[in-house]
Image (cartoon, rainbow, N blue to C red; front, top):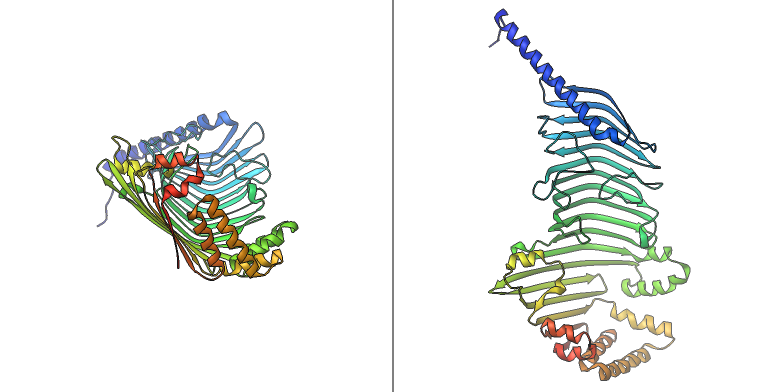
Length: 461
């Protein structure tokens, strides 16, 4: 059906258009005024054009250039306020470039979801734990700080090199916490990774939830997952295929898994100082049987249960070095909870597990030979210029001596290691019955009395 506009409708329709145009013009003028109020104190601001869609819901400013007193320059191709001007659905910045003191930052797109205001003062953001930013996302970040710093207040703002991020999205953002974050296509290079030296890294995928304590020195995260991390520096060359961790203790469980952490020892030896290469090559040959590639996998999980005013904490950890060894750890510890403390809240907020007030408990350690122990004696004997039999006999004598000085339990552990090197055993199990943690703290002042207090049993297979 077609709708016809008669002459009697013309005057009201024109009035409606005029009203819409005046409202649109008002929002455009407000945007320019708000931008100038927020930015002109930082330097000289130029704005190319401001406008508002007549029948749409976007107020925009184009070709913004802010020049600071020291020559720093910020340009924004488009600044868009989507939705109601006073309570926008989104604030979008497109094609951003910041040049400052020999450094630069390029950003294709930056989006603030439900920011609560059309123009943001990045020095005094209004979002806190009770009123977080609904979401923020960015695309196409390139930051180059090899010759200076751009002064941007970003998580990687002090990174001394070049960094690129394909995309990043976060929700429930405040100064101290992030509800969730996903990142894709991150890579970087630097001449100064502190103790690691110069190098590069790449991280195709990262996601996390429940990031808290950003304003502290020890932030925590409920869950994290990353894939295909690669690092190549002067002192470390490694890759990590997959890492996933769930540390949220509210459900009574935590877990983590690491797949294929590969350390390229051969390449690291080439990069090491000449006087260190021989010793490093010996270690590499023992660990990797000459391949120069050390691959590690790890798996862990744990639980807690409330029992009246107390709790029970159980954990399991296993790490495997391919063709070298496997190390396992199990524990089951009864715990005294702080008076009046809710168990779920206590375990969920626990940052330092050494703070646990345990009533004792059981701990088991397992060490399995996957090839490394058979390689130790030949390498050490060759470096000392003695036969393997002579070396093993010397080690047995030393183990017995330590057993006399430090107790039979320590002697049994050292003797067991010698048996594994001699091929007489392939696995060692150590079972410990722990005293209460308060007694352990006292024993820390007298380490020689620790083995007897631990009730240690060593088994060889």
